[in-house]
Amino acid sequence: MPPPPSPTGPTDIDALKLYLDSKSIPYTTITPLTGGTANFVFRVVVVVSEDKDGAATSVSTIVKHAEPYIAASYGSIAFPLERMDVEVDALKQVGALDLLPGAGVVVPRVTFYDQEARVLVMSDAGETTLKDAYSSSAGDDLDVCALGRRLGRWLAALHHSTRETSVGEGGNPVGRSIYRWAYAHLADVARGYGLDGEFCKHINDKYGALLATDDECVCQGDFWPGNVLLDGEDDDKEIKLAVVDWEMCRRGCGATDVAQFAAEAYLLDRCRGGKGMKDAFLRGYRERAEELGVDLRAQGEFVRRVAVHMGVHLGYWPTRVKWAGEEETKEIVALGHELMRRGDALDWDWLGDHMLTALCG
Image (tube, rainbow, N blue to C red; front, side, top):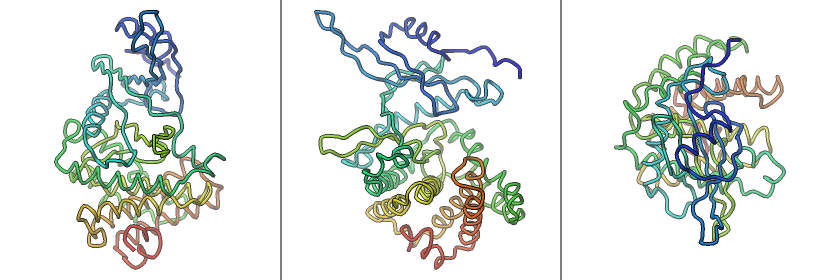
């Protein structure tokens, strides 16, 4: 394997120390973070003030640096730097919206951005993802349904409030293209499980192609429990939620955000404890949509897109990210194909009685 290209910015602790010093940003500790793949990410405790006796007041921040490739690929997979411009734009715009007062759902606050070096400093939103919390023993005491409902309500508010909001140049065409990956590779996976590859090509041609032109609202673009952080409790003893990683944010169809989260919540419910987050999330989205004057049961195309995209997600990603053993994975993939077929045909009775009961039943 050839060596990775020379970095253009801080990709390790020593380089980040030099960078922070050059920007006169005082700090006490730097900790590299793992879990993501696209960028170089650190938790940095920054000194914000000192009193007359020299005692420092510090705050924990997240520093993210982008190279023109996926960090985990060691330079072998290109990823345009403009992704960080999109994230900063989205964080600032969405952060300025009063989407759902009192919901306890926020986005990180941008405190510094060096566009030339592609270094972003933002507020620290917590250490534990909703996915990890759900799966841990501590998750047994977590009101997963309440959290799912809050996120559903927040997402409906985001989609409703950003119908005229632009994000990224051209609505983020890179994000649109990457988001089609599962559609484009679905047929090969299907054949490996003895399923209809030609039908998957139809799904890609009909629905995957729409991702390039969808223009209904701002979509978070990678909305799943792994991109939701839990940050303790507020004054009302309610866990605060932060939605992070906005590089894939784009203009699109809100149904894809709904479907991605619902698919991942279904996998958690099925494989990690059956806590009912999928239905709670969908119910919350439907509730808020109805409060905003939208009856999802009358929005056939929206429901169709939710079902198809959820089916694509279940039909592809569990074969790439391990959730279960071979036989159960085969069952999940087959369910994904059933969802695609029922969604494509807009089979209201099946959808309302099965996977999307909480959304349109």
